[in-house]
Amino acid sequence: MDTTHEVLAAQLQLMRTAHASAPMPPWSTRARQLRVLETMLQEQHEVFAAAINDDFGQRPREETQMLEVFPSLSSIRHALRHGRRWMKPRGSLANLAFLPAHNTLIPQPLGVIGIIVPWNYPLYLAIGPLVDALVAGNRAMVKLSEYTPRFSALFAEQVARYFRPDEVHVVTGDAEVARAFSALPFDHLLFTGSTAVGHHVMRAAAHNLTPVTLELGGKSPAIVGPGARFEHAVERIVFGKMVNAGQTCIAPDYVLLPRARVPAFIDTARQVVTRMYPELWQGTQYASVVSDQQYRRLIALRDDALAAGAHLHPMCNVAEDPLRRLLPLQLLSEVNDSMKLMQQEIFGPLLPLVPYDSLDEAIAYVASHPHPLALYLFEQDASRIERVLGHTVAGGVSVNDTLYHIAQHSLPFGGVGASGMGGYHGEAGFRTFSHHKPVFRQTRLNGAGLLDPPYGARFRKVLGLLLRRG
Image 1 (tube, rainbow, N blue to C red):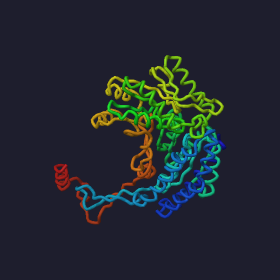
Image 2: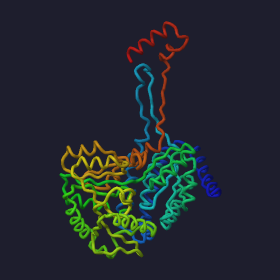
Image 3: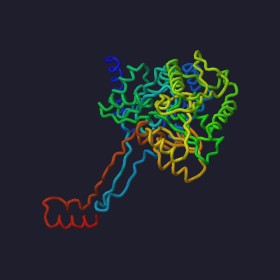
Image 4: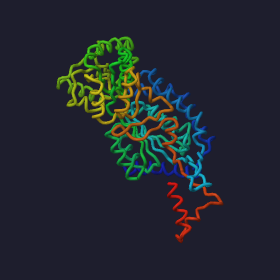
């Protein structure tokens, strides 16, 4: 542990020294780094996808391209279009009593950013925060997951080819390395992963007073409202649950729907699965569960629920395959909050159905549980939509779809409460990784001296004017 910490600390010091020599890199430097990152992705995305496929055992290349490569390139190009504007200081007049002075907010790089990446989307969740760190003028150390060893090794190798070691540095290794990494005195630390591990990361960062952005998870509900386009709702929920075999932090975790609609949801979902995955048995367009450990965890959650009275509804005739870690979508009804399935984030292709008798009951159910990272609402009536939005708290919301709010450059991505803190993406990410330094500029001719001691008649008269203006 000591040796690991010393090596990482030395790397951090190298980057700190480099930052100190150029603490306000111009737009040309930032744009060059973003273009280098773009070039690396364009040239290496096929081998990155192949490595991710090998790590999972089966990860469709199409899903990696759609859910990792495309949003990564899109975020780089968005930063290149808008970063120069984000960098500009923003001026304003001083408060009336202090005129003619004026104020300025100067976006300033924080320094060296630490980024801890999970295994489920290892490319996008490394590139996304890295883009925001670089456009804000920082240097970055990136810790990749030990659960995607082939991708992690390849990504570290390629970053070392394209970037100087004092610009971007990638760290690989196990949980011990991750603990040492999170204990470093970064200028900001971003962690994406489970709530349980988030506690440890925040505790380690607190020792150094390192500010953190935590992108955690939780149980993200999908609410099918009384006025939903029902078949559309089922289709988008199934899509959101089956891409990457449900191993998505913002995947629908459970469905709240009108009680009378439960049988129809099950039947419609079977039709959707058959249409979307007509050759699911071949396993070429459906992801495997990433590891034996995760596979066993999912089976244990399902079996615990069944033992407690839940009903299982397989969505196809494909048998689960432990050797390939292939687990087709399974719905569960008759669930309750005493089941582990309803207490823990599922992070896999199991989907509980929770019936309600009124929309207010569904709202109350969501509000009585920890704030989720995402909430999905399917409804056409504007007043019902506003009621749900106004009476629930979630990190982000998609109305009449799933997942895609994460891909909007103008929307920050982040959690709230147990699902995380802080946000990034686009300008929100630039702000997260910048210090907006406030500067008050006094003019040569000013009235500040009127309030200097000794506090005599002049002072009392000026102060009286200020208080009346108050």
